[in-house]
Amino acid sequence: MRSKAAKVALCGVVSALSVVLMLMTGIVPIATIALPALAGCLTIAIVAETNVRYGFAVYCVVSVLAILLTPDREAILFYILFFGYYPTLYGLLMRIKRKPLRVLAKFGVFNLAMALETTMAVWVLQIPLSEMEVFGKWSIPILAVMLNVVFVLYDYSMNGLIVLYIRRLHPLVQKYIK
Image 1 (tube, rainbow, N blue to C red):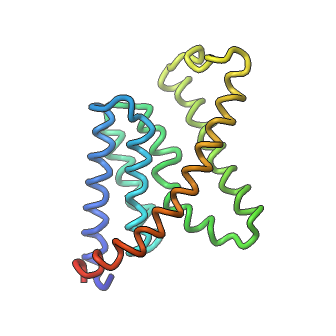
Image 2: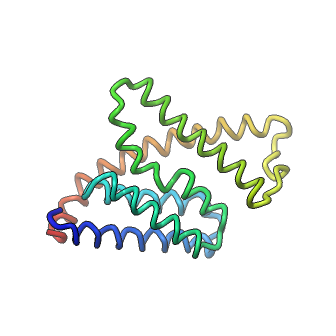
């Protein structure tokens, strides 16, 4: 991108689309996790067209607007605590040369975010912990394993989305934004 105005305009468009997706959590309540994940994935375009700083700026703007406008409070937690910044952070984590350290860092970020989300859901949003105890005393470990399996799929999909964006959409965006 050549001008700062074009970068800011792209950030505004992506921010607006992300907020619309977050607002839809009030319309489609079963999408409490899916819509924040989609909203976060839109920042792939920001990082690809500008840089990581603009990606984090979009994350901050959407987070504030989501707090003010989004009816589903748990969706807001998912966006703020993981899905909003992870696509931007993904590029930074991929710079870690040693694969075991990179994988450990990714799982560390995810598990810390999910532990924080669960804690805030129980203490701040007053969601009863009993709703999470489907498997009795093994509920928390089983849920943690299941979430980590889903994270592996999400992380793998993130790489595919980035490749798809760079190959297919990046040339189109460049043509219209120049």
